[in-house]
Length: 83
Image (tube, rainbow, N blue to C red; front, side, top):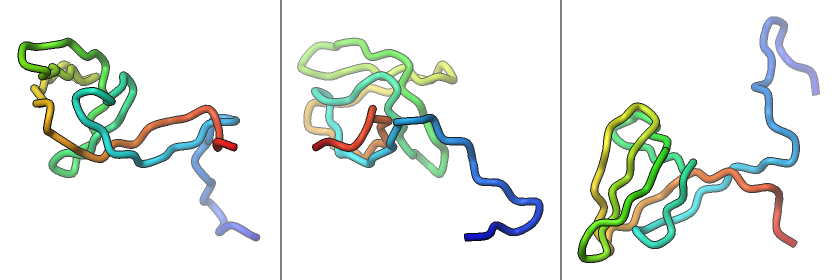
């Protein structure tokens, strides 16, 4: 497959695969990427809050409180394809 002149594919880390998964307050992980308002937000830190809630701190310093029943899609890097 030939590429157009002047265009290069984005570099990909070896062995890493990006997958979309559903996440909630129990399953969200550091490094997960959320798409909110057309912007990508990368989770830098997670802190517990009362009632099963979690504070997500993003790479840009913004914070968001998610409740136990909040479900959203995230992009997550994995070490490879299961199996």
